[in-house]
Every structure is written in C-alpha cells, then in structure tokens.
Image (cartoon, rainbow, N blue to C red; front, side):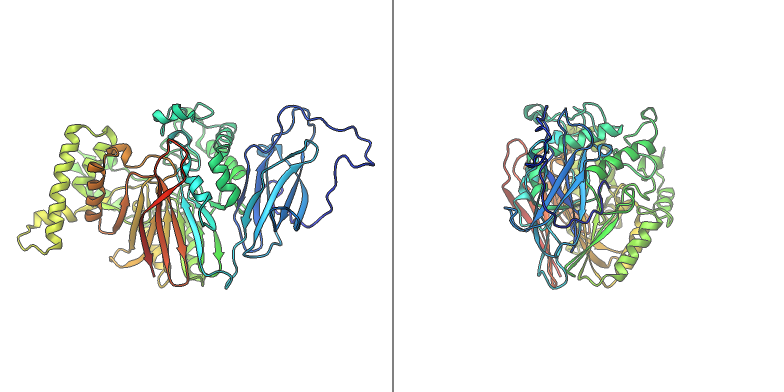
Length: 560
C-alpha cells in the first residue's frame, strides 16, 4: 500500500502561499482534481483505509503532495487528523492511507486536497466498527456483479441511501470484456456505457483504465462516499471462471496468465485496497460488536483447483457417472487451498461472536437438480431458447413438478422410476461450492455448534438456501444477492412473467434446499444481525434504463 500504515495525528495546517513565502503563486494548467471521488475500506474499531485518486496539473512537477483531513463533523471544526501524503505515480496516482488511533463506533468525515492547485475532493463519510456492547444491530448491504455496459448503477445509488453500516462487495466489481462484449444490450449505446478501453483488458494499464471508468460513475461514487466497503474479488476482476493458474477467458495467445493475474491483482489493490500484508491473499476477518464475525474468503484464485466440466465425462452412451462421481468427491479437491482452509477453520473455532458470516464469492448451498433437467438446461444455456427446446423443457418440468407434488402428498401409486426421475440429482453449477463438496463438509464441521450464515454473489440471481451437510442436517443459511446490473436467468428465459415465474416456482419445488429464487431482477441483500436473529431482505430496483434508486422488497427471512 502506498502510504499504508501512516498513523495520522493532528498538525497545524500550512499554506503554500504564506505571507512570508516569496515563491510566485502557482497557476495550474490542464484539469487537475480528484475525479474518481473518495472511498473508505476495511473499517475496524480503531482504523479505516481512506482512498482517492489525484490527477495532477500538466505543469505540476515532482510528486504531488496531498493533505488528508479527518474530522468528526462535516464542517471540519473538530479535526482529529490532518497530514500530508504523497501521491504514488507507481500506483496510478491513487492515494490510500490506513488511518489509525480512531474511536470505535464513530462516524468520521474526510477530504483530500492539494493546496498548490487549489483542488479538493468531495467530503466522504465513514464509520468505524463497534466494539462489544456498542451496537445492538449490524446492517450489511451485500452486493456483487456490476457490469458497466449492462445499464445504470441504480443499485449502488440505492445502497448509498440505505441504512447499511458497511457494504460487503463480493466481487465482479469490474468486467474484463471488450466494448460490445458480455453485458451489452440496446441500453449500452443509448446510455453511452461502452467499455473503455475498447478491447479485452489484459495489461496493467488496461485494468487501471477500466477501474477509472467504473469509478467515475456518479452512483458508484456516491455509494463509496457514504459507506465503508469491505471487498473481495471474484473472477471478472481477472478473467471469466478463473482458478489458481488459468481461466476460461484467457487464451494462449494472450500471454502468460500469471502476468495477467499479477496485473489484475495490482490494479485491484490500487482501487479496492484491503488491509492485508500480501495483496494476493485477501482472506481476512472483521469483528463487528461481538455480534458478527465476518470472514471474507477467496474462493476464486488463491487455492482453487480447476473446475470440473460435465463435458469431460460424456461418452457415446451418456454421462460416465462413475468417473464423474469419483473426481467430484475427491477429498483432495480444494476451492480455498490448504493455507486459507486452515485459517478459516481456526477463525471459526476461535470466534465468540454470535454469528459466523462467510463472505463467499460463489454459492455455498446445494443447488442439486434432476439430471434430465440439468441436461436440457445446459443445452438451453449453450444454444439459447428455441421454440423446440423450450417446449421440451416445459414438458419435462411439468412431469417433474407433478411427480414431486405427488411425493409430497405421499401418493402410494408412485413408481420407483418416477421417484428416481426427481431424486437422481447433480449439482447445477460446478464453479460454485457444489463443485468442491468434500471441502465444504470440512467447513461445516469446523462451524459445528456455531450460528452460520453464508452471503454470496456471482450468479446474478437472488437465492435463499438452507445450508445442509452430507447427512441432510441444516447447519446454517445462505443469503445470496442478485447483481448490480449483470443479467441473470432472464438473459436466457426472458422477462415474461408467464415464463420466468413458473421457472422460479418449479426450481423452488425441485431443489431440496432452495427456499427462494428471484431469477430476473437486479438488486442487493440487506442482511441485519442482532444477538438473537439474522434477518435478510432481498431488495430490487425497477429499471437500469433511467436513474431511479427506489427499491421494492421481494422476500424477507429471519434465522435464529
């Protein structure tokens, strides 16, 4: 971190143009300023990371000096810290300072300014975490998957206006695709939201430019200005479906994946700084008033083995289930890596907080669906919804739902073949925890006796799932958020309620652990924790086409 660990203390402010200074006044040229706004990250009980980025004047020589002011009031009459920091050109002119010696459960105001060019940032707000006994409720806004090309960031605007104490961002903060790539629609051109740079981002300067584009979005800026963020990356900060040493969206002609990954991690750390000693290891924990122990994980690249693919197990006679099951249940397969898994199990064992909350990029709950439905869904995902495929899909779903309904009614006329059609299931998404079931059981065992909640993103759809172990025992719950803007299942099935509603209802009936699914709306989760309850509201905006931050709540749940 540039300037990381600087402990700020009150100082007397000085001007570059004091009366006894004979230096001629400086007239800036060009357009200097703090155009990417301000942000705060990784709040703790006594510290918080404050961020901005400064664009120097074209005639500004040397290293620009910035003053950071921190106060307990918006008018900066009670300044608790004011100190100079240097802009690091090697970090794309970003500024991030870990401000320490703060009071717990306290709101602070901050600004960055350059006296030479007479420029100043907007005033940011942040809040330190409460110590034990200082709060009766913790409100976390959980969000992920913001594709600039897919529409306006109304969800960020809604979160900025919400009661959230902290924003938990679970990744896909940017997308690596080129202009006109994934997420593009008729809205992209209408709103002027084509990706910059125009090509797929691979080099360090490309990643930086993409972050700058996203960070100039006014609604994203406002969310950062008003709320502290705790972030982890998912795959699109690097490349689609990334794992430790590769990605689906990285080809041999694009150079070394390790170099690309290093570029992506450096840019991520510059724009979304985390309080870590190694920028490649972003798993870390946050104690929130003794109520929540938030454990932010890296289920994407630090230790993840390459995802399994059903395509590798198909033969002329169909799916080689024996080979697939052997690989799928392999106890050596890991999504966390040995070091992170050891850290996580230790954290779970040692925490006395009421709620153990896992911030996981990908779904932890089981989304096991009937094999026949899995196969036709995969075909639709690959080829799109043709009339013939949709008719076949509809016929199959009707059959399965009818059988499941009869099972729930204990219909004695059910045949073994009919029951097998419903109960022969496989995981829908091998890119999620479902692809690493042995390691998931280790985590569940480590959390035994604890109150466990998973918050997740990645899918662009909203889910409420029971977390169950291999024996079917409930060990916790999952509150999984929809996306900020990236399309969900409606990108496959469309938005017609006559189609999407039965799709949601049928999956809720057929997937054992699924309690709720919203497959077509964009929004976030408001997860609230008290010593006795964990509550979740799934909130959605109505449009991405025009600026509108009003939300509706589609589902609520309380876990105790």
